[in-house]
Image (cartoon, rainbow, N blue to C red; front, side, top):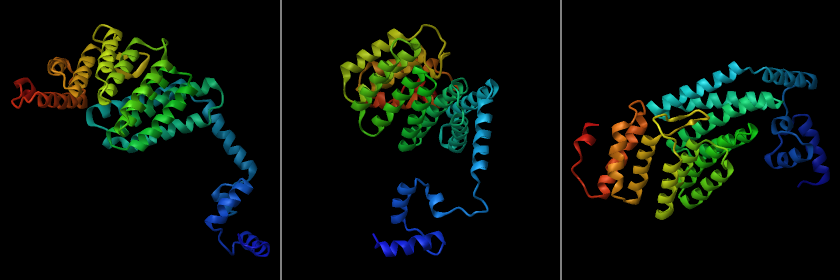
Length: 319
């Protein structure tokens, strides 16, 4: 630190704009004065808003957020659904800018919504959109962005008082840990998500959580626990062809989807049952789920390699 006499000169020069504030002194002054960096270094008087103007702007944003209607929330959810459909058919790499703008608009609406009746619907929409954005980030290899999106999704789900959305975000975030080489920790996170959900969630979501647990157990080399989780998933899945969970729109899961997921998991374990399970899933997969179908074919290739089967089935080649 400079001497007291020198500091008096510095302060005078800072105030008169004759000396820029160095990063070292800025770090100290921000704490002393409670100022942001732009405020500390000086906003030109011509563009600096008065206190009254600042409050007027704030109240204007709050008033706008309080009038967010059900139709606007529906528009937010429709945009999320459109992005989900595009991701399912085209992949995530081309959707980064659209998704970033969508999340920014949702966050902005939530930041200025004061009362619970205004906040909850927007928070729920943000939770759903953030988990989709996070999954797309995982697909793109942007693990830090994925992690931040999941943190946002969890905060939004808590704000919306929606345990199903919170459990789903927690469980998907466990995949980031798995990608980072910590599948055992990911298993613990998914089990914590199951405890968070309790018996309040839908059977389809519980089946999804068990299947996710099984997948991460396979990655962690926990074969027995993996098979127990798979059995629990099959016991929980509702019967019938319906795959969309009406209470949790991010979840697509029925018996056929679970068969594909089971085959993927068993292939990771090197289980002979994987091949038959995957071929069963291939026969019933929805052709509009392009990315899922591509993943299924990759899983089949892996399962055949584990069995040292180099000549592939005509079904596989025809797909």
